[in-house]
Image (cartoon, rainbow, N blue to C red; front, side, top):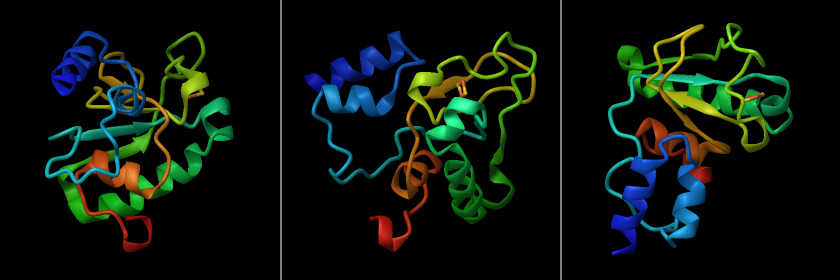
Length: 136
Ligand code: FES
């Protein structure tokens, strides 16, 4: 029941944080999952703005690049370029590090922002790959 409600919340608020929603409904990230939270994403853009950087976005980008190697050419992983916007970022700075999934690339709007993406387990989950043994 609650999981269904969480899915409805995510659909109603696509820019909301998956982690926050998962915590709210008690869907623990420690629980075994057979499918990634975000399936079939092809593009990951990691904000490297000032605030996201203070919250660890450089490490998040490095983890995406490292773990994304498992997927080869299937996915695009890049620094977000939101220089066309007023703040030059996704403007969700307090919730960083922020990652846009399936956007259209540099200087475009759209896609879905995932907040607070930190650590190898979180990155592996978004990519749909196995986390490194030390983070599992
Ligand atoms: S600095 Fe990353 S969203 Fe603003």
